[in-house]
Amino acid sequence: MIAMQALPGFRDFLPSDCAARNYIFAKWREVARRYGFVEWEGPVLEPTELYKKKSGDEIVGQLFNFTDKGQREVALRPELTPSLARVVAAHEREFKKPLKWFSIGQFFRYEKQQRGRLREHFQLNCDIVGETALAADIELVSLCIDIVRAFGFTERDFVVRISDREFWTDFLRSQEIASERWDEILQTIDKLGREPREKTSEKLGQLAEPVLRILSKGGKSEKLDRLVDGLRACGLANFVDVDVRIVRGLAYYTGIVFEVFDRAGKFRAIAGGGRYDNLIEQLSDGSASQPALGFAMGDVVLGELIGETATAGEAMEKATAVEQKINIYIVIAKEERRADALGQIQQLRDRGYRVDYPLTPGKVARQFQTAEDLGASIALLYGDEWPQVKVKTLATREETLVANEELLAHLQAHLSL
RNA sequence: GUGGUCGUAGCUCAAUGGUAGAGCCCCAGAUUGUGGUUCUGGUUGUUGCGGGUUCGAGUCCCGUCGGCCACCCCA
Image (cartoon, rainbow, N blue to C red; front, top):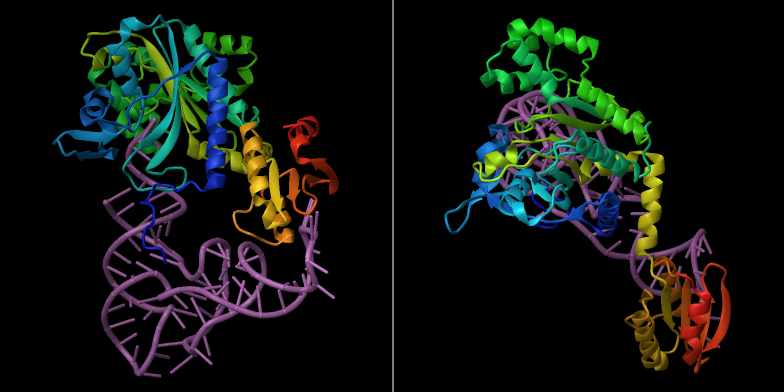
């Protein structure tokens, strides 16, 4: 029995898990760069106040927070957006607008874990700052779709549900509802799918009838139409559904909001985001003001969906397998040749080949087995043939003798990496 | 935070209240320096932990920790 284990909700990444994670990160990075986004990072630990301040009280109860040795109230970041807002406010004039920034990092929350929901996870965040035009919303949703597509998913596998908070705030204004109640009503609409209809009606009171009528009709707006038109021009309209039931829990969203789900409805949201035009101004106490929008995509649900989707799973399997293989394994058949082998190993590694060899004397049969296990395509045997080396192509079992000093040239000609 | 359910070897799982097992993995062999198959042998457990009932507990009871599921909440 091992005494120490990881804390609940925290993961160990064994090599295969790490390879899968790196694969996800690589796709995220690759597609974000295709869209002209640049990478940045913020601190993992932030003052608790940053999250208490304006992002809605609902998040505070789930913070992984504590008091540090300097008596500061701090929290492991649960999300990136407040940090981004702070950074943008502090460096507002240093960059031309719009900013297109992305970040990959670890985020934390303190709550009971269950499937798809740990106390720690990795997230991609993509944000556009300094652009009010709907074109920015189209760009962001397009990027989100293309990132999911990059893993081999199609419109049969996932859907982006798009909504607009302004659709609801316009409605509430038309109903002459006091703005203090808006957040509470939006929360109720957000919960609509998860709560019994009677409870919703009770909470909405006189609004229940018009709200339910809108939902049964589907809800439409000129802005949402234009958004979908823009995505259609990109050829991405098949990936989206307008669905005004999407509101999102965070209070800081102000306009378009969206969430990505698997079509089968088996998992939690894969990604989510929206427009938060007032947050930067709020967090900076008015010293900076920038419209902004962004989304986040986590590694946990995405990873589960990749694992359960044949095409995506195979693509990842293939990519990670290649990544973990070595190119060349050195078989030391005679210990007298170890020094010669080491000299060549150094040369090969300098040239960029992935090379491994037995650290202790061992049977030749076992060494070939190890070469196979490590995924080498070629084995070099150092033994009685010296100063020649036996070059064996493992897949075909073909062997040729090559003089050791001609080995580099020989491999360059015969081993394509 | 609340409720339900589960916890046996590194992994997947067996064991009517009566001496804890199998498969896989791993390790070592099968006449001198050649790998994916095969054969032989071998290692591994305070049955999550702590109490209790019993002649006797992996099995029943209580507590605790951990996993899973639902609720809460959702970045």
